[in-house]
Length: 124
Image (cartoon, rainbow, N blue to C red; front, top):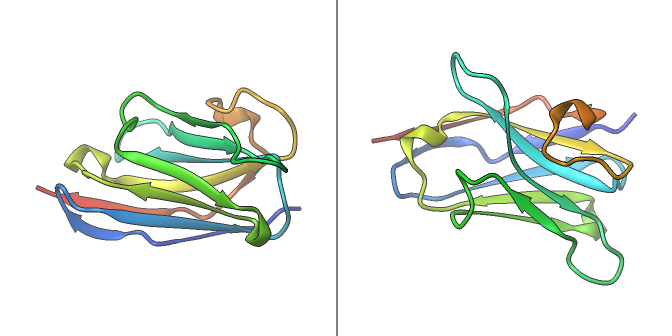
């Protein structure tokens, strides 16, 4: 069982930045971020593959592309989500997720392990 612990959420003004972290208890092939706003379904945000020789492939939803950056520290089994130019519509609970095998990274039902979630609130 892989344990995921998120941190870094909070309150920020529109246009500001936050960085989320997710520490895994062991290495997994894919780590990603999803979010769920009040009254909405959980949606894909970003994901990355592990790679031994180079930064792994990264994937983003259209709504965050160009503003958010996902990265991982393989030595620490940690994935980060740098969120810049935040908008009020980015307000949500952000969840870290992980899976050991190759999957469609945008599908939440493909992931086996989930963190507890961290609240991000962007004020206008």
